Length: 86
Image 1 (cartoon, helix red, strand yellow):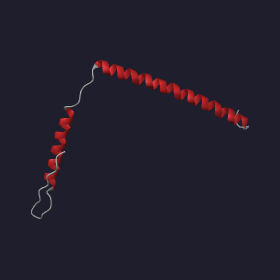
Image 2: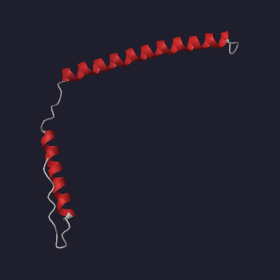
Image 3: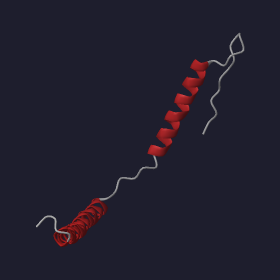
Image 4: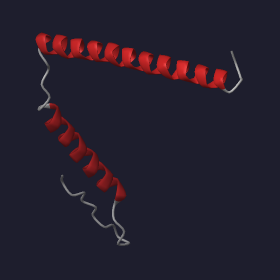
């Protein structure tokens, strides 16, 4: 990354406006450079990753449903055993 140039003014303080302009320009150059590296995925890549995400979501939903059911039944049995809710 480029260094920000801040030239001193008459009093010896750095010129903040010039430093801000330099940093902003350097930042925008870096953004443009990184954007040139971006590659758009193909239709097949998008379809395969979408399918993986959908399958994973349903797998986690099933897992959490099973865990919730087991813990709910265990809690009901525990409360019934302790003489609480029926």
